Image 1 (cartoon, rainbow, N blue to C red):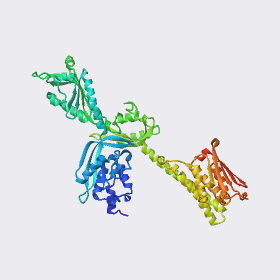
Image 2 (image 1 turned 120 degrees about the vertical axis):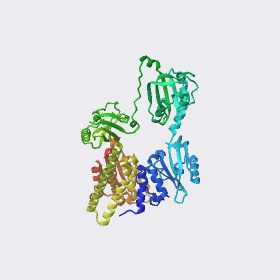
Image 3 (image 1 turned 60 degrees about the vertical axis):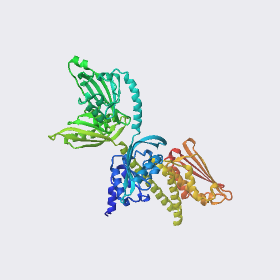
Length: 627
């Protein structure tokens, strides 16, 4: 069977897109105002394809109701509203901030002109609490095939941490100004890419030979340093986030008006300043005049700070080795993940971090790759800093020189433990489901065989089987919540509702008062629920045919308790106008009840046919009832 052109186009524009792509593909859109994706206009298809494959937080608000579609990068923005927010109208999703964003949407829809805002304050509800948040975002009109505005293309990100950090920084500046004024060393704080001098203490002004430089850029306050490389160094520190340390660096300063420029030697530190969100805001400068020491030693000494590897900004364990496989580098993520001291896993010591059962296998694969140059790819358990062994994927590629020889290996480790456990859990649930289905078939098969042996006719057999299978169904209905996954778990079945459900079909609509139940709540496992349902069904059926429920004046009292870890239950039937005679032989119902009580529940059941009504005692260990 071949796909139609619409189906092919549908599958193309919804292909990929990560988790949100999967959710969108899986949703039954036919039941929503948007209709089937195969009917979506090209403007929506194009916008959604761009959205799903963008790495920037992106959302689409579509149609008159502004129904919401978005990508994986945007999913954290609605926080606990995800994935509920998918496909819902924008005013419903953002009811807490619609008084602000609603008019912005309306403006774009009415004018067709884009809208953007920066550090927009939105009082958003998060975790049930209204909080002050800040955002950069833009709205762009999406026009339909007829040129009208049919939707909004939204991109943006949260700046709450940045705004709060900026406020804190401004307060900190004042505090630092007072502190730096008393510091003996030359200290300055520069803000922004232009290196505006925000604070310069007296020692710094004395070093450069001028005052009143705060509020000016470095180039304006110290024009003689332009061209000496310091501005370029400040640019690099600000752009890369890497600090710079200078030792005994020569600098030419115009320290006195009308006098020649003076050469000085300084040690200095350019330290990038970042706010709590990780955004760079400026450079901290600390300078020490070492001119006299340098001249006394008659030598210039210079050093530069070691650069931190860019890979430390990557949220993944990265390592490298020499051509022979000797590990000589691990990034910070490795040490943060494993919790071991820096350098302790160099050489071959890294193998000690693996689970003992995985070491030899991993070594064999690694040695094979070193010999052949083939890419390294293997799953193994790695010791986490918590002491737990967690599953990871190890990958590595070699780098070859111009002569084709391997020069180095670069590799990564990626934690997949949660994915591994999720798959194992899924398999466990499937096996449990298979086990329960087999048990039910076995019970049903046994009932059919035993009923066939004792039923006087096909009709009687059908009615008996119908009642017994109905009891099984009611038991299963009660225990169904108990066999869901942990995320869906609500409660186990308990004995009172089980009895009520099984007995109710044998009573007339006005006969609720004829059954008295008294006893504590007892949680039942799946197997115990099935066995008890069959027992109570047989007892109720017999009571309806021959006992207390066969006449209007009859009634039943059921009482139970749990002394010493055992269930003790009494079923007492009360009749007044006739006498109960014990049966001449044991029927299938009593046989089934005895077999269930002893075989499945590990207990016993006894029948006492008294003239005033049948008395039954059932006991079973509580531990068996919870299986």
